[in-house]
Length: 185
Image 1 (spheres, rainbow, N blue to C red):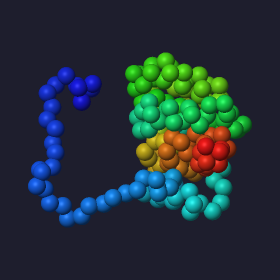
Image 2 (cartoon, rainbow, N blue to C red):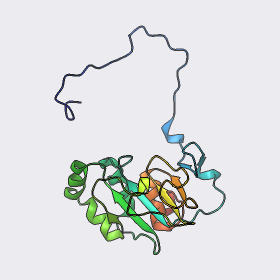
Image 3 (cartoon, one colour):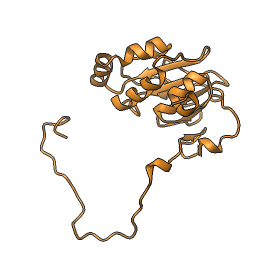
Image 4 (cartoon, rainbow, N blue to C red):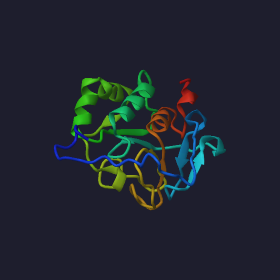
């Protein structure tokens, strides 16, 4: 909070004697990459539930959602020394100017550009069909953004699949929805 605000703030925490109806323990090592299929964010499938290749035309990594420096580092690790598949557009959008500058200083932008991606300044763009990466009829995009409603990124007959930065980066390389382990990572 101190990094992002000069105003006083209050931290809210549960009382020490709080009683909970249920507690959940999640073993994160057992989680599988999950993709949100068109046309709702809750229309999800884990990678092992996808039985046919889903060929993509575009991969969007970043924007205000999943455009943190950690996300860009993850995508750069996957794209480093690799190329975006011919015929696939890969667009990287850092979330803020501060993250853009940090990514530049860390050499991440160079990795993206050398891989064949286009790096945008922080802005609203393809996520809401504004500009840069607008989908045509029949095109498919894997995106780290947070919405995949009908026509969200362009034509009403395009499809948007939501995924993590790691899956979006791996998919940009293979040209189909893929996980990093398909690249030997």
